[in-house]
Length: 331
Length: 265
Image (cartoon, rainbow over all chains, first blue to last red; front, top):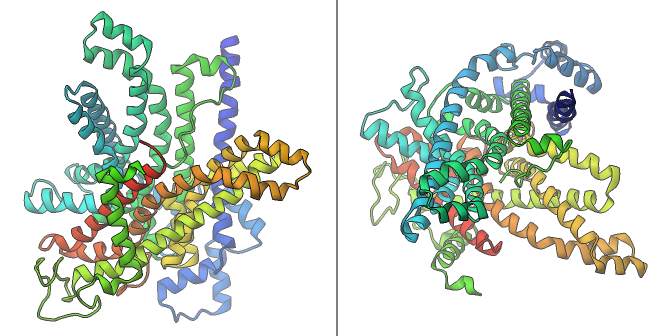
C-alpha cells in the first residue's frame, strides 16, 4: 500500500508536468503564429498562387472557415486545442489533406531512421568510450576522445552528401535516395547518428570517467578485476542514469535533424513534410507537427522519469526529488 | 595568455580572423566576381585559376564562398545576440524579482527549451517570411531559453553575495544593484556560453539556408551553396562538399576557441 502511495506521489506530478508541457507548446506556437506580423492565410495563398494572387474577400472568409482560421483568437485557441485533444489537427492549406492523416503517413519513415540512428549513435558512443577506457596508450585515448566533438561540428548536409558520394555513387553499395527499402534507411540513419551519438557520448563518457575515479572502482582494480568486467559491472551501471536522462533531449535533436537529412536523401518523412510546409507557408501543418513532436518529447521525458523511479529507488521514496540533472538545456 | 601556446587554439584564431576579414572585406580575399559567369568555364575542377573550381553557371566557387561569409556569419552572430539579449533579460528579471513571477517565467522558459530549436526557427520563418533576419530571429529565439536559465542561476547565486547585501543595506536601489553588481558578475558564464552557441548558430543558420529559407538565389549563403551543388553530387561532388567543408572548419575553429575562453580545459 505504501508502495502504491509512493508511486502515485511520484508519478502524478510528473503526469501533470507532461500535460503542462503539451498545452504550453501548443500555446507557444499559437502565440508565435498569431502575434508575429503577417496574415498566415494570405501568406499561404500567396505562396500557392504567386505574389500577385488576388482573392475576393468573401472567398477569403470562406477559406478562413475551411482552414479553421476564423473567429476571435480565443475561439481559435480553445477550438483548436479541443480538436487537437480529439486527434483533429485541422486541414493543410496547401494540399487540403487533414494534417493528422499527413503526419500518420509520414511518421513511420521518420521513426525508422530515427530509431536506427539512436541505435547506431548510442552503440558507437559506448564502443568509443570503452576503447578510450581500455586504450593502452594515452595518445590513442586522446584521439578517440576527439572524435565526438568533431561529430557535433559536422553539418548534417555535409556528412550526408559525403556518404552519398562515397557509398552510393563511387561504390554503389547503397541507394542515395528514396524510402522504399531497408537499405535506403542506412545512410540517412548514419548521418543522423553522428550528432546524436556525439551528444550522447558527452554525457555518457563523463559519467563513466566520474565513476572511474570512485573508490569502488579503485577497489575493483586493486582486487585484479579485468577491465572489461569493471566496465560492464561498475562503470556502465553507474553511467546509466545520466544517459537515460539525455534520451529525451536526443528525441528533440532527432526531430530537428530529420528536416535536413530527409531533404538530403529525398526521403518521405516528418522532416521533409515540415520543410515543404514552411516553403508553402502552410501554418496548419507546421503547428500540427510541432504539437506532435512536443507531445512525443514530453512523453519520452515522462517515461524517463518512470524509468528513474525503477532504476534508482531513492528518487521515488524520497518523495518527488526533482534532482535529476537538467543537463544544460540544448547543449 | 597560456592559450596562445596551444597550436589548436592559434589555428582556430587564424581561421576566425580569416572568416571575419571575408565577411567585412571580401574583395581582399576573393579572386573573381562572385556573380560573374563565364560560359566556357562551367563545372571545372579546382585549379590555380579557380581554387575551388566553378559551378554550373561558370562562377568561381572560391569567391562565392568568400562573399557568402558575410550573410552566413552575420545572421549567425545576430542569432547569438538575439538569444543572449532575450535570454539574459528574461533570466535577469526572473532571478532578481523571484517569487511567483520567477515561477511563471521559468515555466515558459521550460517550454522554449522543450520545443526543438529547428522547429521553433521554422515557425518563426514561416510566420515572418524567408530571409537572413527572420532566420536569425528564429535561431536566436531557440537559444534564448538556455541563456535565460544560465543567467537566472547566476543571478540567484550573486543575489545572496555579501556585496549585494551590503549595497542593499546602504540603500542602493534595485535597478542600480542589478546594473552595477549583478550584471557584471553574471556576465562571464553567459559570455562563455554565447561563444559556444556561435558554432551551433552557424550550423543552424546554414542548415536553414540549405533548406531554402535564406536570402533568394543569387546570394551566396553557405548553406545555399551546398544546396545548389547538390544536383551535381554524382559528377562534381566538390561543388557541394567544399562549401560544406568550409562550414565545418569554421565551426570547429569557433568551438575550439570558445572552449578555451570558457576555460573548459
